[in-house]
Length: 76
Image (cartoon, rainbow, N blue to C red; front, side, top):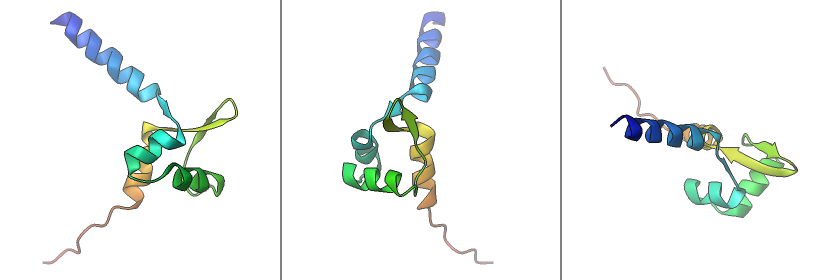
């Protein structure tokens, strides 16, 4: 059981450090690679560089998702 917990913890660390290409990020967001690339170039979405290549982390992808969130009005 302890080995399983260690494996799960290592996997979570790996996921947190992973950087996605514009193509991969687009697939996760339901957008095209071109949409992601243009949004990065226009500085409309967060990203990071790995060398000279723009990449998005899981946190960046979650940020994009949250910007589109629409909450229902409160009634009461």
